[in-house]
Length: 85
Image (cartoon, rainbow, N blue to C red; front, side, top):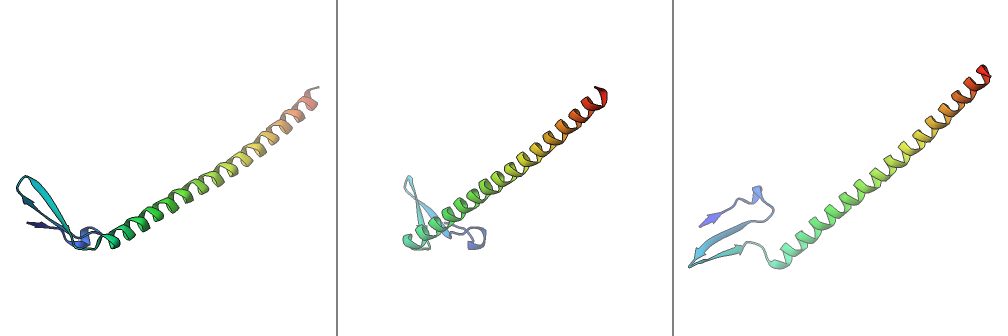
């Protein structure tokens, strides 16, 4: 019989081989496990959503910066044309 320390995993478990099948015995009730899975899944979804939101904000900032640089370059070209022409 092999057991896994709870500090190495959020789910404490043990398993043993009976015949040709492995049987896993959970130390927690199924409802507790389902709640933990739902919470973890929700946390992951929040993190991914935050990453997309931050990425979109960064994209908008870079886009605004590029517009400003384009405008400045156009102004310099216009000034050069005036000086030469």
